[in-house]
Figure 1: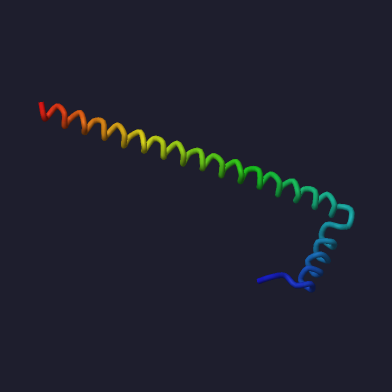
Figure 2 (figure 1 turned 90 degrees about the vertical axis):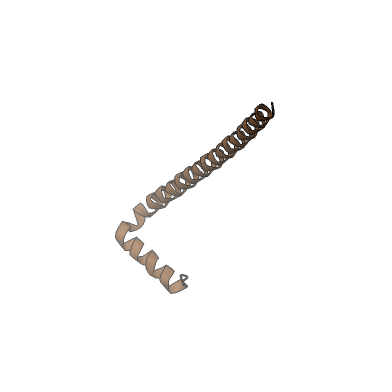
Length: 80
């Protein structure tokens, strides 16, 4: 579903009637700021998720190494 020229014109007329010519620049500025803040927050959350994933991977690797070390110690002690 995409917007054609008639739909865009209709939306522009409705916005003009609702907000008036003087408030449209203010509205556009507010929308631009909101879009910027949304993008900034999204990027921050994506970075935090990637950092958390790395931390979890490292913790898993550490747990595997510890388990292997524990098993090898048990094997050595059972052989003796």
